[in-house]
Length: 278
Ligand code: IPE
Ligand code: IPE
Ligand code: MG
Image: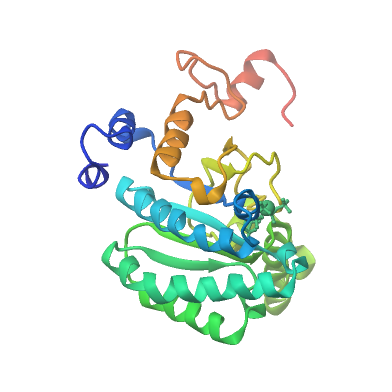
């Protein structure tokens, strides 16, 4: 938190917003569906790709802000498995932008102690971009700060299917397939985000009220924040507003509030009421 305040002009809206945040109650994992680049461009009578280009700066801002806030994980939805349906020229521009971003940003990721990870079926990416991405992941793997997951050619369903298949394959090899029974922990530990906390705050820009196959498992209890702001216009104030809104949410996880109602052990509750155990 201090690290963020250090770079903000005192008295500015972003400084004041950052100051109101409770450093103890920041989300442990933020997911962002970065949407609205095409509409941003269309409103300016520009080609869609101009919107994608304008979307690079908010990526930098979000990464740096989360790192300086001390947030452990940030996942950015950069390209969905469904985005291959777009015109080839648009898809190629997206790969060129990723190439440009990685070329320029790895040094900054190192400076900011950020670990880059790629989630999604990246083997399908153009070979050069894939190699560059893998190099960047390797170069930053020893860092200890923010984990930045870039979701590229990502599908939440495919991620779960891959996790389950990996468990089955392992059981087959060890001869335990016949007695295999899956549990949530096993699946979580095989996801691309293994070891990271579940998403606490899911932000979607451009006003669309849908998940679009993003992090289906990890958002089970995420707070959803949808803003009409288009991604290229999503600035630090907008991100800090999302954090402030998150801190006002009453997160019950199926329990009840206020906190005065201490959670009751399920087994003792069942016992006290004489209900049969499940
Ligand atoms: C998000 O912006 C970027 C990607 C999906 C790669 P869009 O390109 O989806 O922009 P809209 O939704 O058409 O405005
Ligand atoms: C979701 O945005 C994918 C990314 C932001 C990368 P889309 O624009 O592809 O989603 P839909 O088609 O509106 O659901
Ligand atoms: Mg879109």
